[in-house]
View 1 (spheres, one colour):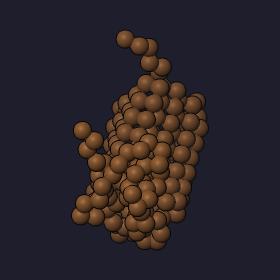
View 2: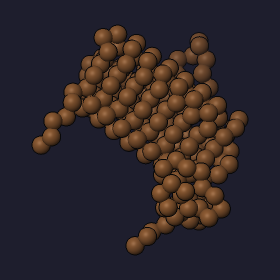
View 3: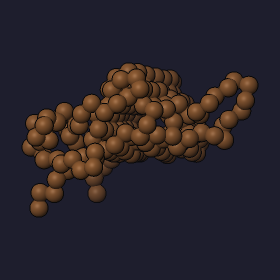
View 4: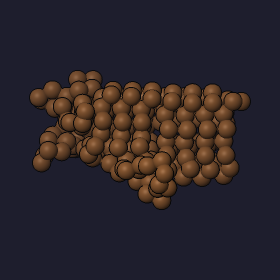
Length: 192
């Protein structure tokens, strides 16, 4: 059995009980983890991050500065959230109307990237290895491997698991992995 480093929690961060934080995870300045939040192993939560309550963050996630993960947000393993990206939590908020029971589920698939200042409108899913461009506003589900940009976000191409934009041959220039498009969805070609 290998030694796993304990989580690091900066002295200015708050972690409310009960919460779980995996081995090797780093939680930096002024971050607040609310109750019943699970953070996996080897994650990095930057300055001024808020997560919870009842949020699940997978292993190997990187959440950059000034990101709020509200109840309903679910990050799978290997998700990257760029600085100041935004997850909304209610579709029709009003200051004078309590809507905490209307927080919508927003799952983010394994290996997905959300660029700086992008906005993810709640209730929509981000597919595995998808890439949301900086500043995009996601108002619909994003398929696996899709590259989306703009306001509102539209698919402008495909990306590989390594995060490289795919050309017409749908072959990753970094890894050589071959993909195929079927019914406006992309999948990794079975190489067996």
